[in-house]
Structure formats: structure tokens, C-alpha cells
Length: 420
View 1: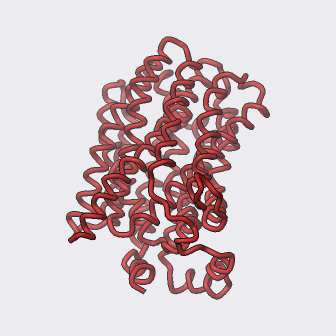
View 2: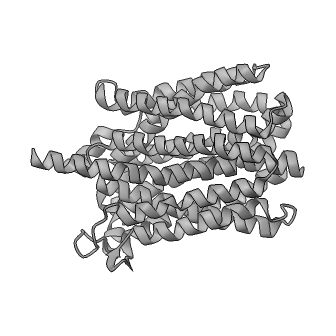
View 3: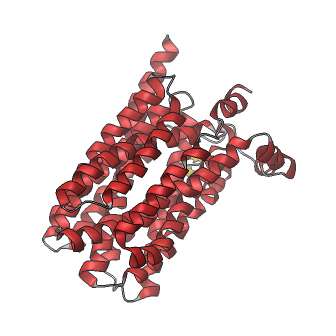
């Protein structure tokens, strides 16, 4: 009983901290994937194909997540008198993220090389922060993973909520620099995570050695993973396609709102904020159905989300007013909320705690590959078919993903990693 109380106290302290880092990521997300596209396409007048190219190149660091995982698994840095594996990299990533955000609306976007370089390093810091927070989360929580997943995504949606209403109102006045600076300043709260979140010193933890990594990626072990432990390969296949929808729609959706419905920049932010409220509700639903109602389970919740994505994107092709779009995307973001919780819980289930930084980062990196591919395709598909035609293609992608989602054997993974 004393142990349970101790764990509860630990979660009460830890969950708000880890949620705050995702709050920061929510801010960065809406600034760069909602407001920035409107700024570049509508206000600056960049061609949508050029913006797609910029976004793909700038997004490349998100494929580095396994590298950050490996480095933070293996190499510790002395911080505050302690040898730590995650927090030093969280600091470095945070600084790169918040210090470079304002420059995305300061530097001339027509100076392509400079602009993409700054955007690239902002994403590099953000991806490092994200990877190391995820790895520390997986290490610290081995039992209540679905609850942890809900906490993480609620933090992200709250960040979107704040940026949508708060920063959106500033941008409405045309002051993009002030809005992005405020977003950057608020993002410094990640320092609270570094100061207060628990992390064992390397000397007290089970340190990961080069031999551990070599053993994991050895020919025999990889053969075993791809033949007997097929949950890993199905997890990677699923991850590689899951985020194609966000790549093909999210970055170009907001400029389409402005051009089709005459939405203002504040309405764009308001739209993101309102849909995030329903994503939070969806995250709670995902936790309840995936954890509390055990006969449902994570994969069934994820399959339901994919079906809802298909329905929601199909309906988006037919909307004629901004209010109709609201109704459809409220439905869609309910699915986004419970789908994300189920998705992260599934990935945690098929991750070995021993090398959480590397292995979990691989799943998340493959998610980002899907986003990058989607953005590249959008540069071709959106000009050719418009957003309405793009919605149809995305709907088909999402429904087909139900097949690999159900081929991920999470029960076998838990037996091997947690019981074996």
C-alpha cells in the first residue's frame, strides 16, 4: 500500500511536468503548421509548391529521432552536479526551439536557403526535445501508459488552445513578430521539467552500453524481430503511413480556409483552439475505452479512430460554409484525440524499456516520415486536385490503415518486454 501511495505521489508530481513540455510542443505546432502557412501563402504570396518544398526540407530533423534516442541512451552529461542522460538534451532542444521560432516571421522567406536553414534548426531542437521527453516518460512509467499518453496529448492540445485564442488575437492585428515572440517566451517553461522532473543518475540506473545497442541491431536479433516479433515491423509500417493525412492537409488546410471561406487569421486560430477542446475530450475518451474498459483495448480504439478519419475527411470535401466545416472537424478531432492516445499506448506496448530512447524514437520517427511524405505529395496533389480532392485521397489512406493496425501483436510484445 505504501508503494502504491508513493507511485501516486510521483505521478501527481510528474504528469503536470511532462504535460507542460507537450504544452510547449502544442504552441510550436500551431505556430508552424497553422499560422505560418497562412503567413507564407496568403500574406507573403509564396507559391504553394515552394512552401511544400520548404516544409519538407525543414521537417527532415524529425527523421533524426532515433539518433537523439541513441545519443541520450548512451551518453550522459553532467547537469546540476548529476550525470543525466535526458535532461541536458531537453535543455539544448528547448533553447533551439524557442530561440529560433520568432525568426520564421522575421527572415525574408524569399531568401530560401537562409529561411529553410533557420526552420531546419528550429525543428532539430524541437525533435530533440520531443524524443528525450518521450524516452524519459517511457522509462518512468511502465504500468499506466495509456493514462500517460492521455496526459501528454492533453498538454499538447492545451498548448494549441492557448496559441489559437491568445496568440491568434495578436496575429489578427497583423503583428506576427510579437505573436511568435510571445509563443517563444511561453515555451521557456520547459525549464520546469528539467528542474523538477525525476531522472535517475546514470551511475544509479541501468546504463545502456554500445554492446546493448549492437546486440539489439545484430543480424540475429533483427532477424528475430522481423520474423518472430512481427509486431515491430507492423508497428513501423503503420507508423510510416499514419501521419500522411496531417502532411497532406494540415499545412495547407489553413490557407484554404482563408481563400475558400474568407476566414481571418484570428478565425484560423479560433478554429484550431475549438477543435483542440474536442481533441482533449477525445483523449479522455481514448483513455477510458483503452484502459478502463479493458475488453475494448488500444487497437480497437485506434481502428475506430481511423474509420472516423475516413468519414471526417470525406465529409470535408462537401462543406460549403465555415460553420459546416466546424461541425465536421469537431467530429474529426474527437477521433484525433482518442486515436492519438491509443496510438502512443500501442507504441509504448511494443517498446523495450531497456532501450526506450532508441526503440520508441524509431516508431515516432516513422510517424514523421509519413508527415514528410504527405507534405511532399501535397505540393503535387493540392494544386492538381484542390483540397476537396485531397480530402478524398486522405480518407482512403486512413481507412486502409485499419489493416496493419490490427496486425500489431501488443500482447506478445508485453510478454516479451515486461514479463520475459
